[in-house]
Image (cartoon, rainbow, N blue to C red; front, side, top):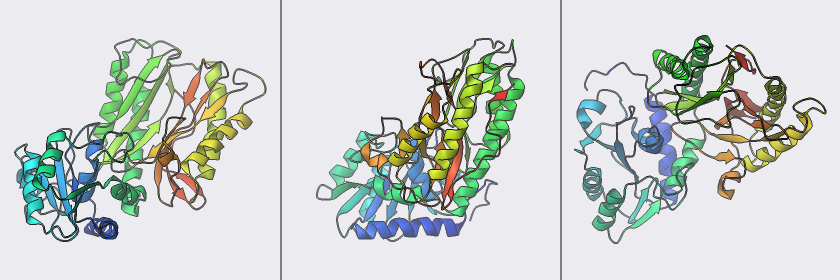
Length: 404
């Protein structure tokens, strides 16, 4: 075996746990093999299944596909495959060169396998919507080559199999997400230190991103960002505006540790805080705590949305700027990529809302509170793990707004 580069890695016991759980579901459904296609889109979220199966991945242009048979050797398919992936992980030793022709090599590997049931599972096929991928993640020509090579085989969407196994985290996965959350909170410290009047918004963002990288996060990762007096929502990147006293910086931040991505939401104010936001954080904290208390095994994502709405009504003060404030839940799974289920106000599908929570599911929980006139909105969020006594926060920072 080649000398291993010093990267953090999951254990072989973790590999065996995952492979066993997935193969049990495959056997029940008569699926001979699962193909996880290469697609490094959405900050590599779309490729989480192949990394989950092979432990090969990391880096924005690291396209990796996986062929995962019911029995036998698991195959990773990549460009510059052996040079990049044999010396960074111990899970998968059958690493094959794609030379950017992933469909061709996937078909070659499938032809080596004995397809007893003639059922090929494909994650991200598009028949079952993913968390943020209602049209799937497989490239058309990759699918076309598989379809033409096996005209009498049944192609089925294996997204639910990977979803089901990825929903519940092992202790190793929770530890990785805890490390990711610790990195995020160090980045918030750097953001608060950099934010002051006269500084460019872009420079504060750069200091925050540097803190993520300096403390061990892989890139790319998802983030949203905006600054201003009362911006309506985050944008996809910072601007060149100059910060002023009284500005709020709103953002979602993620860090990636072995590909595992916690997330946080932390409002940061420049020197002073609008009185409305001071009231809203008190309401939001009460709502967050009520939601976390309800996040026990057996409750559905949809039921948590209703708890959020009731908590908002009960927590809203009877006088002052937050009178009549309302609350809405945003939460979605955290793990190897953009895990499900996902709850975003009224836009989630019934299938997502009907998912029952299980112990050791992990979510970003970030309910928002909005004033009665809809002029102000505030969100704060942390990554939490479901336990029998309710959700436990992975973050350590105070549930407060930060004044830089």
